[in-house]
Length: 491
Ligand SMILES: [Zn+2]
Image (cartoon, rainbow, N blue to C red; front, side):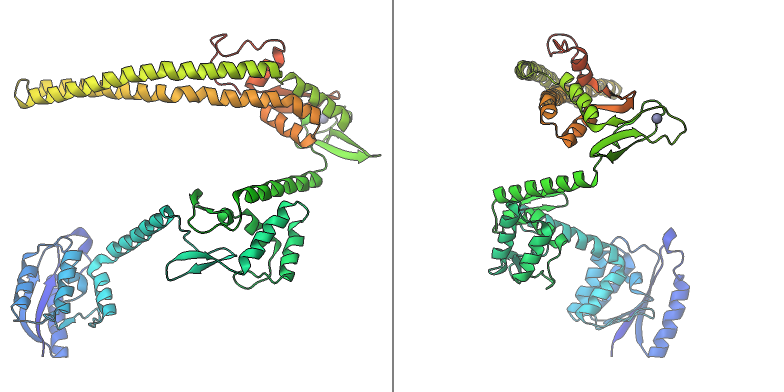
């Protein structure tokens, strides 16, 4: 029969206020012992927190148990015994080594099994510790998996999960059909619906043995996993699984999909310029209608009487094309400017790298000064007040220099890149006008300006930054880098 130590504890911690007082615990435990006919060899009380190890009375209890004078503990709840992993671990160790044969709690049932010990650990107030650890381990495992190029999830159709080694293998049968889906779609001759039907007929089924839907087929075609990479949390990783298709085929499929998407869009929005413009007289929206094969745009006149007339789509696009011509840089100028930009970038990098080196030197000087200052202070050459004042001054100077250095390092690319993009886009304008694709015209205009209006059958807009300057200076853009002081990014 087990010999029990009766242990009661309550700390002066604020959060333990709702716990029974030590006197109340003792009373309850004695009644419990009498009812269960437990032999009590010692009664111990402690008024200390169990969150940190190192309680005196708890240590005394362990000594008694180790000496073999008792082999059981009776306490109100496991959290009276331990609330930290070290003390909790000691109790469990004594259970494992057989020094403790019985743990009794009026509020908790303990049995000496792995599950029982797990529950006991949780009851020792370590649930948070366990959960934190668990999720941290899961996260760490996941990061390692990603670094090794292992996809953390179920393999897509055409692959199988090899559960023993946690790897993803090519499915011998299905992968051929999946590859065929990509190849057929890339020809541009098969809409998604036709593909889904075709492969259903060929017997291809989803992982859950369902017929392929249009959505599933599209999902397959958009999944880069098949060409050897995968996205996880928005980041692209190189997979270590075997690709089924080439990157080239995958890219071709994406291009076809984009084209089909666009074709579909232009069909549903037959009147391309409706949402772009407003009436220049009354600020109402513009609507469009078809008459005798021609598209006419006009004011909706929702705000009352408006005198504005219709404008035919051909007339409208003609005006837009003229605008595009105006904001387009000639090839000649584009070339000159790009060359100039390259030179500018070169000198900018050179001059800034000289500056950065100079600043680095100054920062190193300050570091040396700080070391020396500390030495002088340690050798009692200067007193503490003097030391602190000088140190503060040096540190402030160092921070200022470091900020300046970072600013210079970032500045070069800051305005050069947007500028280059703008030049290239501006050069495109005349080509877009010549092609006459209405969707492209609309997209360009939206990027290059705002406030699109129609008034008196005339289309008008507000060009943004650089486009405005080109439109106003058709001969020679005076804002050419290096030709004046205007070096702010344009566009
Ligand atoms: Zn109007």
